[in-house]
Length: 269
Image (cartoon, rainbow, N blue to C red; front, side, top):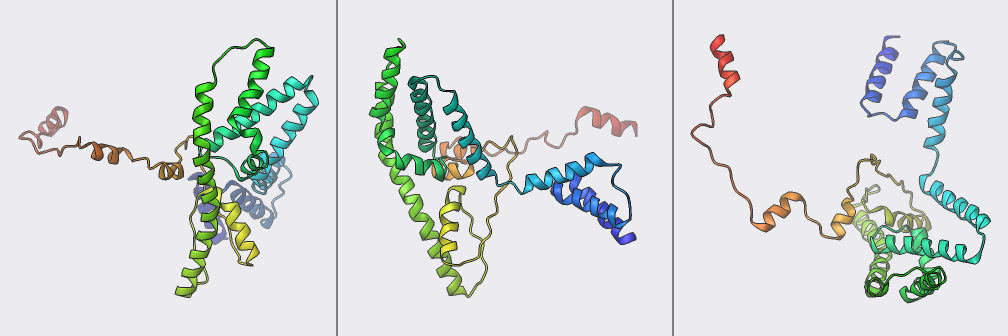
């Protein structure tokens, strides 16, 4: 039928423009073929790909990485040849978590790990563990200055995350209060991804329905707007304005003169 054909063509165009998800498009294509009594058995790879993207869409990315980390740790544990390797791997993990903590990009899961083993993350304790291995394997370096900087920064960072958890509850309470005041039953609340876990937990406890929508970033999207807001970073034009190094372009006597090639073209006509 004409309407179904137009719908399929429109969906195909939207898919090519990146406006329709791959699984939605391929499922529509397969369903359209079946509804037209077309045997899809000659297209096994297309069917396999459609099933593949369906499975991919049902994967919870956060849970996937949790499972991946757990599996890596279990494999490593089975490969350790001595306690030094075990200690070095543990130090490496603590360093990674500490870096994420200081860079304001730690996950809730790693933050819980940090809190549960807080004493193991004390910079002096980490320096002691590292020094133990350095002496044994004749490695020489000075960690004093770096350790001091980290130790000075940690109290402020810990306070930042403590306030972040408090913001979870504050944002929920303020949003609900505003909804009740304006007699609304639906709202959109935009926050950083760190807040998702705490806020959804609070909403679930209150019996409030919710849906979490995550942005899809391309592999080239390296900018972190939430981090920029936290760190009060300026856009390029804001940076220029703050320095006072800006000028307005004025008109010139030759501003309306056409380029040479364009002028010659007009003469030839």
